Amino acid sequence: MTVSAVALSERPSLCWLIHHACGKLHPIRSLSRPPVVVFFNAELLMSQLHRRPFLKATGIAIGLPLMESMAAAAPQPESAPAKRLVCVGTYLGFYQKSFFPKQTGFDYETPELLEPLQDLRDDFSVFSGLDHRAGNGHGNWSTFLTGQKLNQVSLDQLVAPHIGQSTRFESVQISAGKVSRPMNFSREGVPLPVIERPSLVYKKLFASQGDRARIEYLVASGQSALDKVRDEATELRRRVSRTDQQKLDEYFASLRDVEKRLQKQQANAGKTANVDYELPEFDPLAPTLMLECEKIMYDLMALALQTDSTRVITMNIGGLGQVFEFDGRILRAGYHALSHHGNDPEKIRDLVRVEVEHIRCMAAFLAQLKTKTDASGKPLLDSTLVLLGTGMGDSSRHANRNLPTLVAGGGLRHGQHVAADSGGKQKFLLGDLYITLMQQLGVEQDSFSNASRNMNEQLMS
Image (cartoon, rainbow, N blue to C red; front, side, top):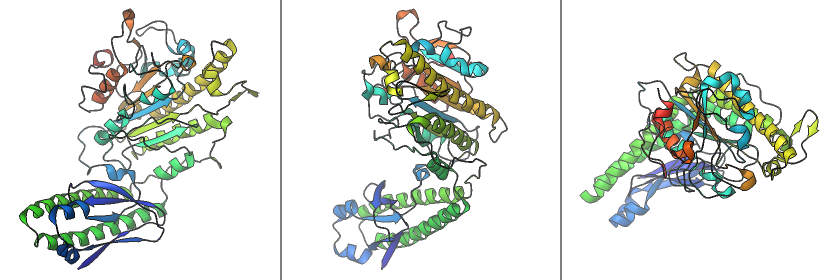
């Protein structure tokens, strides 16, 4: 008896290899354009059966579309309102003297960089004195969401399995401007790819009717292949030893897991949102159009949250190769050169002008979240934690201390400047803040990287 599991793809697709020995899913890549057929022959296997080698080495490749939400577990009923996390990181940081208020507490005077957020003052808190105690230099910028060490799981990927499992995409990673270093890492410490083009973000999140039909077809075909593979494995189980039957039971568990994922994908196929948003004719990827790209990405992020397409989004704001023009005047240096100002007053002036625009984009995004509502009719901002920060404290000195950090929304107590290093001694690490954010999102976590405290007292009523 021979059963074929067809990898359905008109382009390279990700297949899931169900490994008999451990019951886990391993990605393999199909590189050919025509459908790929993988054969499972029980009689041939029986003739060559040496139990452990067979169980370790033999797999069934079931072709499925490339869908990030396949990594999520089966949807569970939600008894509490959905919670969301947005993380935005700037590669070149912010000019500290214009970012941090001079006063602490709730009655601080708004610094220049935070002026675009003045109308939202009660919806965010600003933090000074926080960092991961990581090394200095551009290389350690990538510790922004991972903690003290590079190539560790990032905050967003710790949270995503807990709050993103019932959405189409467990997490979404995008960027505005050219980026050279990763910000997001899997649980295995592998850097995650980002989407740089607004048009591709739009296509990913808001598929057409034709796209939905194709998803349904692929899911139905995958289910059919699973049914056939299950029959073949059942026949094999009758002909092996008890030890091997236990191994096959692990395999059946893997099949059931894939089946649940298929059921979730089928349920979500009809949930793809239609949104009324007009993209520009061309993606704004030119060095002078970084801010335009950033604005569009924020719009798409707001729509993704509103339609519950995902509940975990990160955006990496780059800084290499960008130049800016304001009021018809092109700034005399590029963004990267401005950040390495060497205390040149003109460069600092232009740098702050650019960074004010970054904050203005964030302010518009937060305003959208205050206007848009979730399924319960409440503002999205009430259930969305928004983190704005960086792994670079002072680009001009390549220093990774005292990282400019801002947190908005999510039901925390806001409107304040929290100085973590008050009294000249650092009381908290940035990871301590992350612990509070995770706990606010319902993730029971009491440590993060080198941090083991929290800032609940400062932020929770």
